[in-house]
Image (cartoon, rainbow, N blue to C red; front, side, top):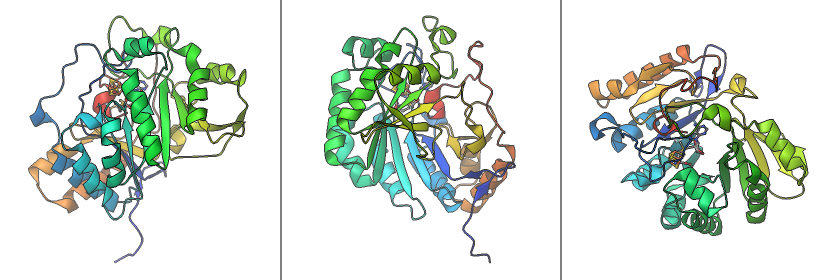
Length: 334
Ligand code: SAM
Ligand code: SF4
């Protein structure tokens, strides 16, 4: 038998070593770009159990996945999330366990997360203005999120990164304030262009709210020195160092700066679909595999290896057509 470590490689020679897992489609926020106000959530029988999620993640790590990001929906609203993270954190082949959260429950759960082996946290924060925060998230409380960030920072996570989706006329004038906040708190920050995932609501027009990364960079350059950086996290951000601070600013630009050529990731949806690309529907039903052949790790691994053959070359988002992809980011795992 070969002693070469397993690797997942697609038709275009890209090595896939990063898995993003949505562990719930539910959330305590209703961000305007992510959900409609009256969301219909999935019935329990349709979503993977925590045991099924663990089993699938285990199969992936044995196939060369080194980094796992747990996300959602809001991952920390799922009961048992912490024990799932603890189990995943103990998988031998895993190098990095990371989390994306809206931080509403972070103040309370941060010690448990650190204990589970989560090293890096991405936190969504689109504005520092409490009223705007309420308008964008519809149900969120800015003070709770800021407290969560403060607690996590004091506990000493290896890296905390802010994720901000920038929308014209909602928060585009706040990019400098957000970077200042990141610098003052020793955090990184990524600005994200909105993607046309799922029907949100008539009140939110994606074409009108589109604000390209290039404009954000221009706005920031008026107040900060941005030094181009080769830093990479395994994600799609292009990074810049902010002057002589410890902060890096990233830009995730699915529309204006296509990053597909270096794509190293796949996604497991809360319904057990393995998505080969965020912007395409190419997928494989892993729930069907684990439910029809419980405990059969070899069969599951074989299906995952074969799925690499249908990973598409690139996404084709078009902000003018709403929605291009009918699944919400919360189901997909942002
Ligand atoms: N609830 C957690 C949070 O908000 O961080 C994790 C899940 S959320 C779907 C993950 C990330 O996706 C967040 O940073 C959010 O801002 C981003 N997101 C959601 N919908 C998006 C969209 N339509 N376009 C771009 N980013 C989106
Ligand atoms: Fe919830 Fe995150 Fe979507 Fe906002 S972006 S509604 S916090 S899942």
